[in-house]
Image 1: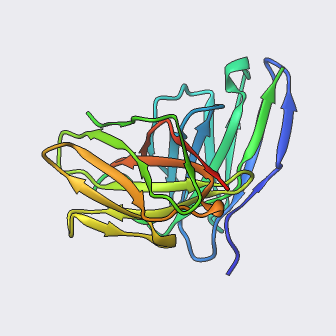
Image 2 (image 1 turned 180 degrees about the vertical axis):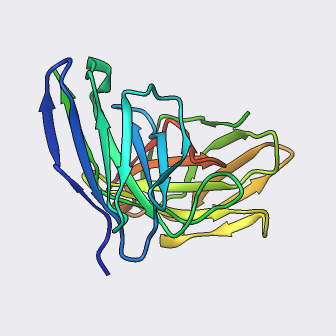
Image 3 (image 1 turned 135 degrees about the vertical axis):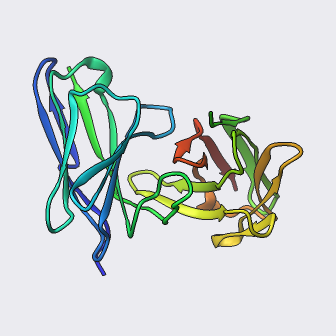
Length: 117
Length: 108
């Protein structure tokens, strides 16, 4: 069984650019969630995708967008990068939704560290 | 509204001594609570979860946590620290709202 993988491991961009981060779910999982973890802070929920549809979003602007593909892999896209977007971006997969009462255990990838200069 | 507060940003213990990582939560309904561990350059790993069953929850690697509704707390404990326990620990409530984390250092 393959765990959650993310690419790239590290990325450096400049302010105003666009970035795409990728995540491969654990085998059999149909839900992917994305989190932003700034240095010295806990992860913050960005959004969750269930069967290719966005299902739940945290307090992030529209320039953060995502996709989930038929094989349940996922992308996180960030447009018009700002310095504050520098963070570790974590992807987590699960078998079903994880929001509120419908809890399903999440399995996290190692993350992509994004630096915006 | 839901929130979680980890009362210590850094805890340092000696190997073989007890570990206590403190977490208080706020929730407008009966909460689900979790503890995750994050080792450097590794993904977050679920240690244990409380979902309204037994108030004392046992997790992996000898960790356990007790849900105390009257104190709105969910503290993580371990009787004897091991060097491999050194990591960042996160308390999480309901909709995957994470605390700021507690860094555990274990001294030889």
